[in-house]
Image 1 (cartoon, rainbow, N blue to C red):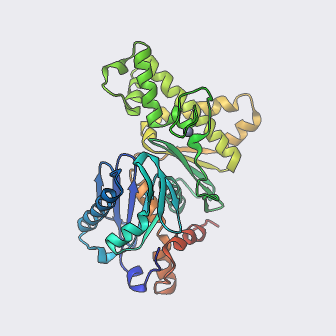
Image 2 (image 1 turned 30 degrees about the vertical axis):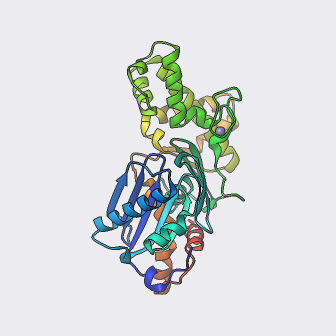
Image 3 (image 1 turned 90 degrees about the horizontal axis):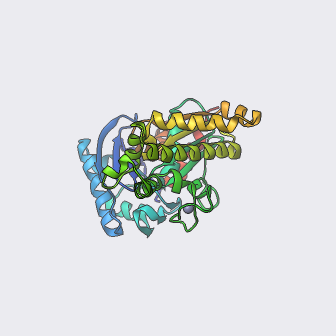
Length: 354
Ligand SMILES: [Zn+2]
């Protein structure tokens, strides 16, 4: 990451990029956070060179849609599902994207000539929820991203908790069933084999093999199909979503025990199942609390929310990483030229609710 010359930091636009297993979303906002342009393409290429060219192209299109050019962009925040070195913007182990090692930040800076800040997508979303105080004023929250895989972003005392390796929150690989389905990580019965989109789809395929279910009418049922079938009364689909929701409730309980947060936000593609999912998770939490006054009190004081249909949670989170680019200019009347990576750390601390 480069230091930001004053002339760049003074530019009016910021860009947030959310790279997922199934899409690349770009949002362009002005200094007040108002939307100026956006673009969405279905998926990032698994070939690094193609991916860089594609992501750069989508960013250019979104900026053009804002009636602007890259010369108007102060910085670009990028959320990506994988392990991210925040100092360099290098991405490793982006399993769902097929990237082994990609210096994403540096390559995009070279391609676009604009400073880039890269963070794990779920951690970025957590930073965005905290800065936006989207679900009320709190400095202690968990964002649980349930998509193709599962990961959590943990905000403690107003700061993003990254851990020594930047892997804090990789809770998708907590083993809930040691004899369960094999996971991409090599273990069996990981949380994400039960509750993530790919795990629910696999359970649907197993159900089709095992017996009568309306899921057999679909060529390749997705998690959304399974929730739809459950709502329609299909017994096999209901068992799959009940099991997924019970697993989510169990992990929410463990997150609350581990971190003592007061808010847990469920996001990601699976959360778009909406109220039928939330209702089951809340029921699961009540079942956990039923025999335990301690668990009941703890969970009773914890708010669990759906992130909602707002598809901007990832792009807004990526933009939140850039917060102090604007904040430092406002405070000093000119850009104070922090390194973009340091700026992102700084803004999390600065925006703490006192
Ligand atoms: Zn695993």
